[in-house]
Length: 271
Image (cartoon, rainbow, N blue to C red):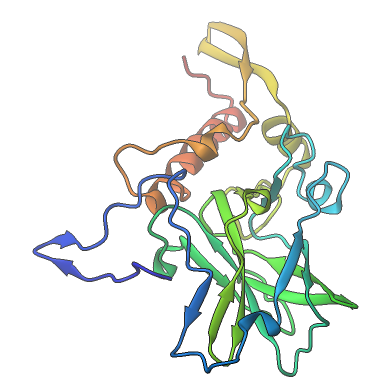
């Protein structure tokens, strides 16, 4: 990835603040390690021809991740939980000589150490709590992957790429909005800081669009309807003051979410 240096000068960063979920800086489609010999065509090596995300409302990804009620044609998954994609190549994939990986990028200045550039290696077995991709099916020129995300990754809209290694450098898929992937908090995942162990509470506070809240004091309790806003608009927002990697991590969302839940459990009411 370009522009990944963490060098600072005089207390200031060499890279501008990564404070926009919408701003983009596409990685190069070709990264050469040196001159390519005459007569060599990189397209003759393993190349990606298509990517399938299984993102329809009836597909396993959305059903398993409890995101089938979202009115969106994008892939929407929850962190810390595996999901499936399929990659079509120009020829059969041979794990003995072919190397590829999936990459997820968010923001304009992606950096691996900031969690805004995520290279996902192909592994023999997925490990809980770590990013990884396992080949679960090979059929002709197609490979189906089970991808495990980290329960601590940034939430937001990620751009997805597939990078293939050749003897002369890396070939990467072009920017394609159809492969954009939303990653959300996961109250079903024990390793996620927002985990809820009560199924009824997950139904009420996570899956419901509209509910009722109570306010006032102990002698004068009132109720009113409340929209929980189960949509994706917050994922595309423009953070104003803090970096993207800080803005979209857990802190503010978790504190607010868990504070309201604790008030309910303790039978406390606030105006």
